[in-house]
Length: 437
Image: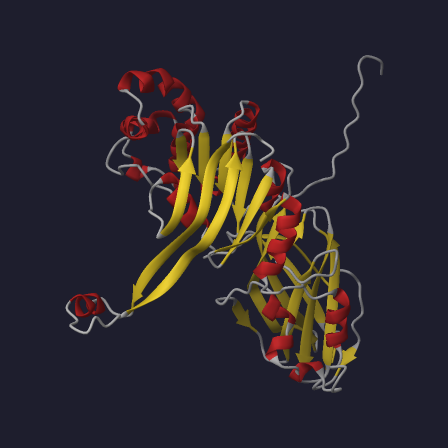
């Protein structure tokens, strides 16, 4: 371990849950004379091992259900492992789920003392830290109100202020910072850097891959309860992209292009290629995406590719990427318009374009025709999560018509290690001089 003394050692840890199909099955099993088993075993974690050195900042990433939160709860003692051992050398401060360790009926001040006492501080020790905690949280007189009246943002500010100002040797955070505003997140990450300089240990889970890449010395990648790999942040993020879409090796741009017209082996039109060859099957799709149109066209398929031509939902900031969609027409039309839009999670349109705005003539199409359109752009949005919308529209006898639209069809995550205000990186250049003109 390059960072010296090991502060967290996870040795072959497994966590198994017994899943019963019906609540009464527990009773039937308890009174079964034949010892019949009514449950199925589910491994939330299976034989996971890794260590964290003193002064390291280690990230844990993985798709939903990978076991990230479970391993943090076991490390902090909230859960017991089914198998394996955990060794922790140092006092832990943990910020896990929003609300963990807080009494919703108590005021903010009362919860500060409650949490401090649970960690092992005396009232006198908490008194000395109170001003620092309240200054960091910066929620004003709300500290005298019951926390059940707090917004999620105020709640996480107070919870993080308590966790980070009680001088922990090990700080563990589970995704909680995604609730705070941008300026509060900057303050928290500055505190992370201060902790690192002081030689303290940080272990955190986040879907913000930009923060993972910027702040972590090492990353552990979990998948379906197993440790898939660990290593440098960039390498693990690249591997995570493959895991997200269920591929051992992501599709290349050449393979996508090959599928755009006909299947090379059979010569069958792409519209009838089997589902396992659809690009969108390798995307993280939204099962509840909104769709409508008059039926003159159908968006058959789509994908997002990074600058290396890999189908993925994760894109690097300030890198080229491509949105591609395949459309089949059900009647003859003139100059159909293909469009894309990126929105935030609140549904606000942030940016978008279409072939008409780009002054691109798409020509005429006939019933049964298939067209593949690709938009290649520079990803200048700040790090975060966005929703992709696709559309095919046009003008028929001078009237605007929507042939087919897909709203919020998939999530796009932008990984960026740069903080900024607003949505876009304006590629700022700074010239700085001392004296002169």
